[in-house]
Image 1: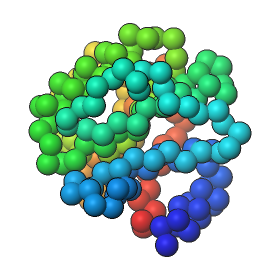
Image 2 (image 1 turned 180 degrees about the horizontal axis):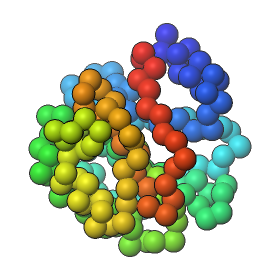
Image 3 (image 1 turned 90 degrees about the vertical axis):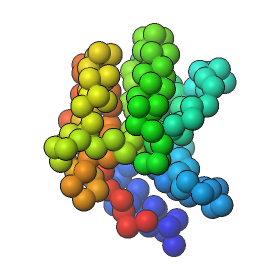
Length: 173
């Protein structure tokens, strides 16, 4: 079952937090999608206060939470953009979303997910997405293709908080 596969991934990798995209929850979703964050019970994770004020975006799904059991707190955004959605609309909406997040400025940011915005270069996302991130002092740290020859899955954070290593795994789910 998917639950046992997810449990095995968490246990074998000793994960504190696992972000999932395309969970297909709800199962009747025609677009796929569905986001989930699974975390250790001793981590204090709550819906981010901005979740109540940000209007849903038409081009991507968003799960926005706040990890407050660390100092400073961390804003975690889990994102899924179906490949059928317009890349230009996504880039406009994503820029709006990043403007809202980065204007708060007092927390660390971790943004992960499947944005389906490949480049012609296998180890990069679409150049317009990279430019957008660069203007906000953000970096994308997944180093290699995540599906076939395309880099579709991202881990984005401030350039000052770059991660030591990143691993994307479909875990056979």
